Length: 464
Ligand SMILES: [Zn+2]
Ligand SMILES: [Zn+2]
Image 1 (cartoon, rainbow, N blue to C red):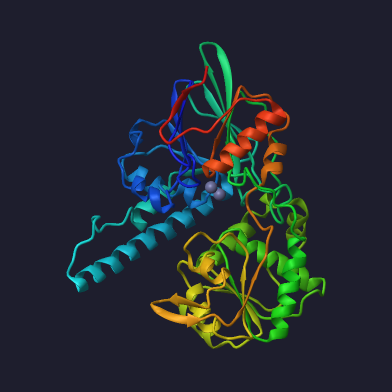
Image 2 (image 1 turned 180 degrees about the horizontal axis):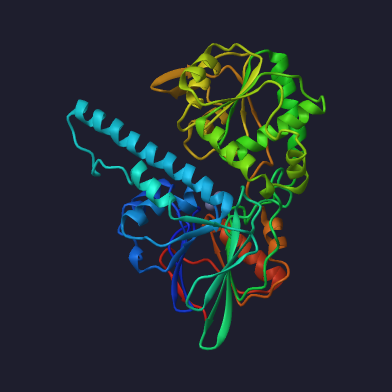
């Protein structure tokens, strides 16, 4: 049995592992590299010939876990891609969207280069097209949590709840070699212990080897006031100021969580009734997937939906797909709440809403997630007096607020708690900056006494 680490090593993007077990070649995740320093890897020849694989298993539908699959399929992979049911639907949306964005970016670059009469360093083709994304999406096969699926050969897989986003899973591969059974567990991305709308992660299954994410392996989330209270406070303050509350948000999970929080606060009378706009075709589609798969949500929420209480429905709430409807919001003076991707203000409709509101002292910009180095979101959050949007400089006069403690990833305590209960021979730490992975490794050795390793990209280990 052998494992090779082919992504998300000493950084957080491009998750991909090759497991050779039970006579099979299994790929676990096949994500896009999104950190600037590693973008080139998306264009390299695949480190494993796609046609040589027996199956691909997917932990969840984030781009850093599924984003390279269409390229893999275009290069010859034709077998099934197994994942939990809602993830299959979400992956379809995410990949199609990624194909569209890549086609558009190439078109924009082509026009710019033609105008400037120059050639760029890379060929002007999309990483993959919408057509290729569709073909890839058609290979996904949804299974249930807890269902043991035979992979042929002498291996089987079981998916278990990871509490990270809808349908997110840890993946347990059981395989037999030389008359010995071995269990290898891939944590996938693990959520906090009390996520608002999906169930918490299921604790670790007994396994011989564990591959564990470590995004916040060196951090403790826990000083913040409850998220619900922080949101109530900001909404009340924004309503008093009278302008719009503009929230840059990711279309998947974060948007649905916010809608869920706002609906609850409104029902409890803790915030005034305001128009709430979720301005994003993608967020609208993802919300439909949540409704369709409501049995994958927390028990109390599922019951509410089945009992007829609309989930993601309350007075004043509107989902906007149409671009013209979206433009009308630019004239909306407020008070009102406008949520739109992207979460770090790097693209999408949010830029238009920022242009319309960032110069107005009565408006508020609220950040609900991590803002990456160098992004427009980070500049606003860092208090820059002026920012550049669509090539023009805009003064920042709106109030800027941030909510802490919202995270789709568990912190060090959550991760240690997840581990509790097994006795693996080795824990491999991935999906974290090197410092975070090493900090978690140290905590595991100290508290649990298990050997840990922080593999480098391309590193292979025999699993004896
Ligand atoms: Zn994720
Ligand atoms: Zn991830």
